[in-house]
Amino acid sequence: MTLLHPDVDERTAARSDTPWVTVVWDDPVNLMSYVTYVFQSYFGFTRPKAERLMHQVDEEGRAIVATGAREVMEAHVQAMHGYGLQATVDRAPTP
Image 1 (cartoon, one colour):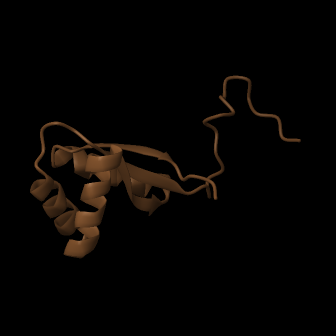
Image 2 (cartoon, rainbow, N blue to C red):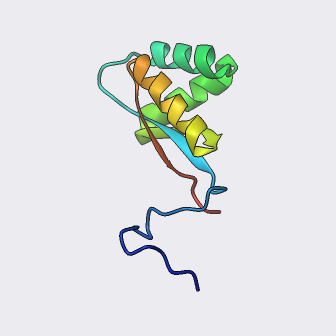
């Protein structure tokens, strides 16, 4: 049994090798064509993949667009904010 420091919330504490995700959220401002453009230009997705993720954002309210180390996911979130998209970092869902 591992004891965490009492000031550490066990729900948010994660091992350094835990995968993280970049989540892009739906918003009422950006056009679907613009979101597709951002996914293609920033992530290098093919048009069909960018459109699939854009539709997921539109229909489900969010889409996971990248998975990896937390620092990289935070950089992706900052980039999405730079494009005017709403995005967050979260722990990868467990299978």
